[in-house]
Amino acid sequence: MVHVYKCLGRWFVLDVESGSFFETDELTAKLIEKRISPLAEATGDFSRYTKEEIAESESEIDTLVSDGVLFTAEPVHPEPEYKGIVKALCLNIAHGCNLRCKYCFADDGQYHGALDFMSESTARNAIDFLIEKSGKRKRLEVDFFGGEPTLNMKAVKATVDYARSIEKAAGKEFRFTVTTNALALTDELIDYFNDEMYNVVLSIDGRKTVHDAVRKDASGKGSFDRVLENALKLVGKRGNKSYYVRGTFTALNPDFAKDALALNDYGFGQISLEPVVLPDGDPLALTESMTETLCAQYETLAEEYVKRRAAGKEFGFFHFNIDIYNGPCAAKRLVGCNAGDEYLAVAPNGNIYPCHRFDGLEKYVIGNVNDKTFDDALPVMFACTNLTKKEECNGCWAKYYCSGGCAANSIMLCGDIKKPYKLGCELMKKRVECALAVAAIENDGRKE
Image (cartoon, rainbow, N blue to C red):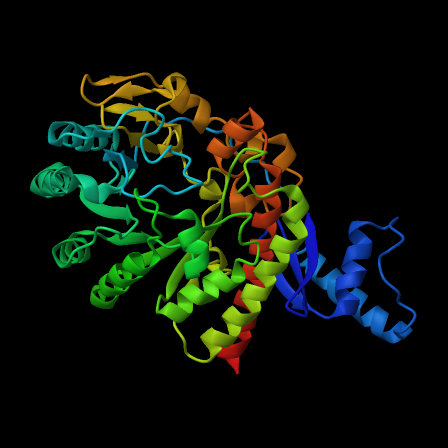
């Protein structure tokens, strides 16, 4: 399978199975398109090219094919296998939040239940569960999530202390991440997160008007000014440690490139901006009719992204971070985030779920860290439904970059873990096109 496309005014060719990626001229791109669809009428007008130019391009294409880097056959992938190894846990440390975000999938952080906070003993049991289930895996990941984790810092600190006290004896190394809306950050919390957290994710949606329209506090006031001040203070003291400012764009701001650029202008160098996922009919939901507009925004963002980075400005956009030389291994490309298998979530009451998105849904309870129960029926199902089992994904050129997409989106919006969320697919494909184009352009810049 081969994908030919134009982005940022340049032509690119991706050989899907080999991962080979080329920048080419328009003639070569159109000739490759003709080989992909030899019967298609709209393959391009070749009348403005000489016979010699066409022959030269055809010869170059033939060489790439004979070298095994173009029109590569799909290999036989191994059958998916459940190994029973858990590498990462998301601890929903607080079922509660100090914001009332209009698009919150977790019902104001309470996950369709009552206000609840994870106890220290449950948190310790979750760490014990992870160690027990991790096999020979040395590095383990723990994400503090919610709701808002700063509402339950006693349990957060107890978890970190306990894990640190036993990791050497267990032959493990813990990496902690916290996702916070930054509203309640104090100097003490900032110092703690910067000392103990391998990564910090800060939730800001972009421009003040956009953020305050959807991310209000419990009294109904916008949170932007307080959040921005606290987040900048944390980042300013973080040094070279990992962090991301993570925003969400909705139907209110289809011009979301402006929000990503605004975040960079505020002083954040590492940014992620995610499309909201909501059911049809929600006033904030993105719709398929917006696809063209949203895709154009990614290209607008990519163009400015390249300019700013070339000028020496720190700017990392999560979805443009694709390594065209040392990408994920073949096995990883088939499974994505490993939700429901190697990655699980734990609720305040100790219930184990495939990921945080399933928290509170009784039919997706896998077990409980407190009573040490664990039914591997769901993990087996998740593990054995990898990319190779998703029929609609197998004909997609971007399949090895999204690995079949988000399982939660497939289940909750499409009713089937094997069915892709269509709008998410289109946005993912555009992000990948832009990311590959950015990588090629910046690689050219390094050679000059």
